[in-house]
Length: 572
Image (cartoon, rainbow, N blue to C red; front, side):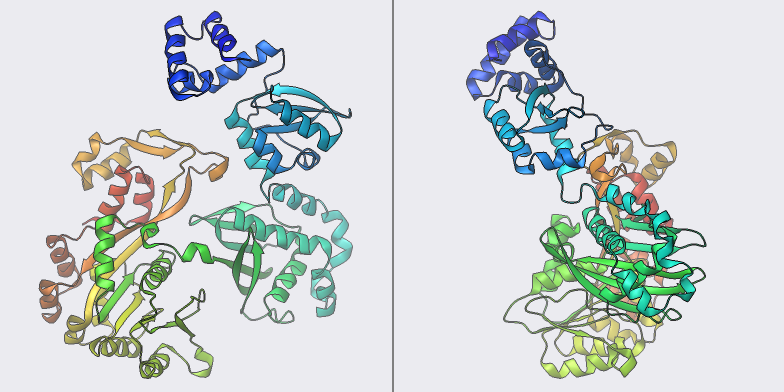
């Protein structure tokens, strides 16, 4: 259909006026766009309007391609993804006939039709839909792991056939388990679960055996959600398969075990850390999914605003002192530490880490794994590396007085020390150091920065929409900032790309406290945690909740996320 006929058709059906058509034609001539695209940009029509007019003019069907639309495996196999994306089309088989319906953005594209015909040797019929809907179908069904859920269900459906494989699990010996662990359904299930976890950006996979069934959950953006489980009578073989991959003792089911392995997905090497725990109905497994790309982030991607990032980088350039990151497990401390190490990495500096465990091996950085079983703990490791002429030292966690004392002395003797501590907020870290037995003068002389952080989920960019907060949410926001009443709030409606959650990814919120002279005076005076916090607020420290609320105002996250992440006292 040429642009002139399209314009007349839209006017004839009362979709647009003559004046709107004239404006569209002017835009079309100025920009070289197709008339339909120009009219869409001007807001006079929608892509649906254009597609419906095209279908009517050509006498072909319009396909809705809604959420209930499905492409079968054989339909996906007929047309390569590169062809589907190049021409913006999907192929649908017509029953048992040797014919296809091509749902296309442009059904007049002869080259596209000839290409599919030559690939399939089938008769071609045409239908039309919008570019956005066709691309959504391609994204959903053509991605590398598009049929994971269906394949998982295929394995679950084998339950009746697999009873003969396992029988009474208590009587199955190790040799039998090895055979079962290498059986096709077991190998396929483990591979598919790893692929699904990678696709969904999961940080952990939980395998939890019950009396009669098994539950499998993925932790995505900090929240656990259930996925298709295996049949119970395949479970011990699946556990054995994962243990074999992880070099764990498959015969030991009474004690907790640890292991790790690697696999490749989407061109990336993924590291899996495995932990087993004996429970009432079998061994529970938790697989930590460690994607190097998620840890080796640019400091800007951690969640710092420009001002805080600049201040943080200035502190990292200091020749000596201690920088402490605080927060509970899962608050993103490791990601921030690795981001800092990535920023500091320089051939001119000797950077040494002491970790438990080493998450990833970083080029240009010397990393050491502690081994408490043989007496190599944080304290003994630190004593050794101080004789290795380090410039920068990263300690995975300060857990005891001896480790803290060595870290402090390292800072006093000209080293920059990075570490973590488990406290709820930044000021409490200073009080906590004193509580574990450090002398106030050591803390005051060495501390440069404490940085508390949490992770909040980010609103999905694909289904973002305006939102009206609940009364409870509005009261919370107003208590922190009375100006919140005038803000425009947003949320995620839920779509396929975010798993219907409305969120995709996480970002950090921070409480940033540089240890200035007034704070040092309070340390020497042995002030309490509440006094530390009040003084920090007076000196301009923004509490976690307020920093989170700022991200709400920017449209990055929601009040619900901030409320669920920050306790009430963190706003005071």
